[in-house]
Length: 84
Image (cartoon, rainbow, N blue to C red; front, side, top):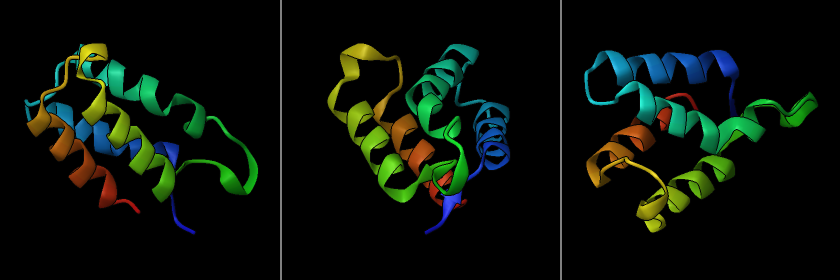
């Protein structure tokens, strides 16, 4: 099963931030959502497809807990899936 590594995650966040659509605060929020997945060790290290799906689901269904728009969540999912 493919996982998004820490390095790939950093690249994805850089792409989102440099594109001008994500603020530093929004990047921090995304990092917090996937923090535990990125700090696992062994074969489960990184963000799996299922963990990405759960993180995106959380963002879409709990807009009161973050500052990302629907379009930003869609862009996040698109950029992250590129690394799976």
